[in-house]
Length: 146
Image 1 (cartoon, rainbow, N blue to C red):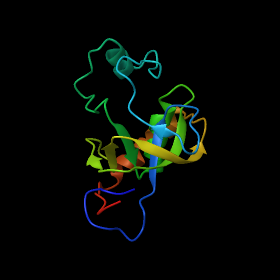
Image 2: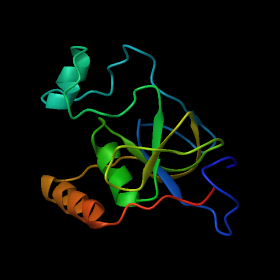
Image 3: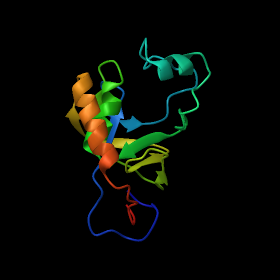
Image 4: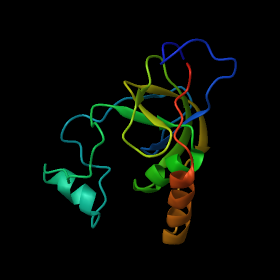
């Protein structure tokens, strides 16, 4: 991964992406094409708003970006939001743009899968709440590179 937000880093960031199912090592993750709603879950208010083309006021993520995080559990939450979603270790080539999320996460133009952590992520409501509480209690820090 090159570019980034600062100078060189002695240790590479461990970045994760939770999302689309069925990815393999070497696959390139890019933003979904406009109008692709296959990943949206019935009954999810944010998903229903996106499907109708009317995002909710708190839906502040850029649909033209791929999101990565250093928080593995936070990525698991996103993976669990997809039908049969997966958790991946990824690398990016290009700058990291801070996301509006309250945990360490960044928007990138694409990410390459370097490992499949969990091919099928399912979380109970209790596990989701626990992961969100843990993620929200952490401090948001910006990497100095990579």
